[in-house]
Image (cartoon, rainbow, N blue to C red):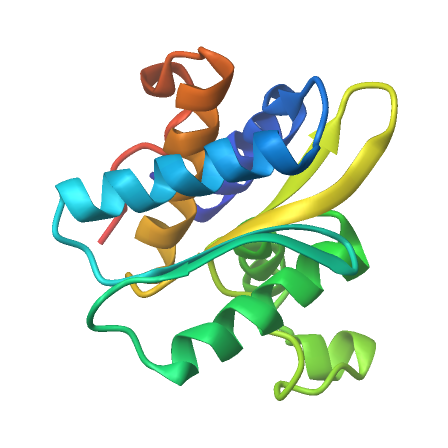
Length: 167
């Protein structure tokens, strides 16, 4: 799948994956789902679900390091600032041949336009938080989050997943 096809598919994911609400219970269910998926697949990752300014779920699995927590923070900052998935935003920057620093003056110490953070859009309220994973290659981080959201919302992941990565 090419860059523009991935960008279009991610925009579709962002439009389609909307929560009816984001409360502590919903955040816990989503986070626990990510944790269970990771454990089932023997993945080392950090999972974070938050309303902006308020962490609601956090898990660091065996094999992760404090650096994964930093990636979570930096990727979720991109979602908080731009209300877009960190992967989709990063692909858009790549397509325009620019960076967060060049285009927006944002330091890499605080922002990472790499895959793994996804906006939590609540019907009737807008984007109020993010779900973030760190520990896998960026495309896999992104897709794990999308798969978990599909499962939580009762959506067919096959309908929304990214196509095969082009070489």
